Length: 211
Image: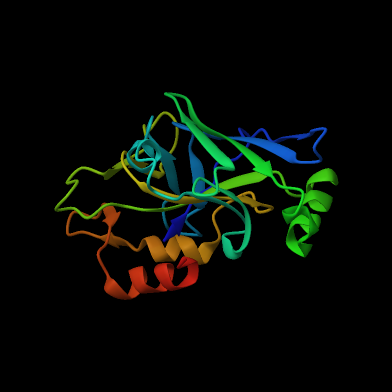
């Protein structure tokens, strides 16, 4: 499973209810570019963006149990659709969520750690865990193209359809390099990078984020 992050557009809010349940709100923007790599000394920068409603398929299928996690760790859950503590709302500009953290769950060490980090302003990022659907099912789920020369020289990957399985609260403000490699962009004969199909790269990504 891949993960993604987009800087600067996340809004998280915490509200304490009379029942001592806690509520979180979050927002992951569409059509905002994140820099995956600066290209090093000789390569081209790589950027990524999610098109409007890129996560629509699993969001609209209510039987898919999408979770809210701490740091992409399935052992550190905060809420889920199956538990009826996570609601998702998809729109043209962003995917938003509302989560309810039960009083009982607040006793868990990772939940206490999260709220401490959130209160200190250290955990304010939102990162989706997703997979790109098979090409046989969705031939045009993504594309890679060169950036407008007036804007720069980067290669832009646009994801049109992705299967969302979890959202995570995180501290990092960019894609970790290991996950960039797991995306396995492969040079073609024409010199343009496209997402590759290496089984090894996919296995590394899935093993790291497997539920």
